[in-house]
Image 1 (cartoon, rainbow over the protein chains, first blue to last red):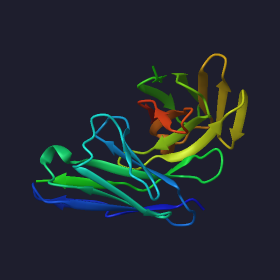
Image 2: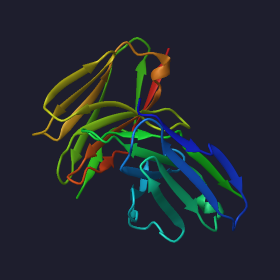
Image 3: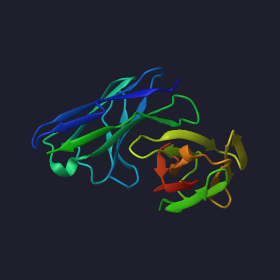
Length: 116
Length: 109
């Protein structure tokens, strides 16, 4: 149990275009999902917390207009990187919080975004 | 403030035992988590401690002392596949995980 899928696994896009990443909890309902970014050899950086049916809570320094998050159902959250630039190239990982204590997070496999 | 400290890198020998320490200072406490992350992959959940003491799960054990703000992950009978980063994370009063920078564990034959 506790499987989280993420799509696509890799994407290459041109500067100025937008990219949508989907995160799904396959066998449980996730009220809360999280979006992280990780640069090479660095730690996970939380970008935003996504709650089903409400607006996402963004961490300080993360532009909400650039990184659009939609959590439309208990099993799906999407992250759209708008007007992507080369500096947005990174490993984006979503996680879904277990609905029961201890509310551990289960991670998707990640999406490697390269902006050319 | 909130702070999680763990060593940047450790090296151990195949078949041996290694202990990865983690100290934390966070606002509120709802558990201490350990995750494993292989290079280029997402983290996977290893263990969770909310009460003081040792939790054993096969070759991996995790220990917690809440009074000391201290945890460790113990890996026994090390295998080459255990080469990975090990992330310590504290769940704060808002049920949000505060992550350490991770400890890169290098296993040598």
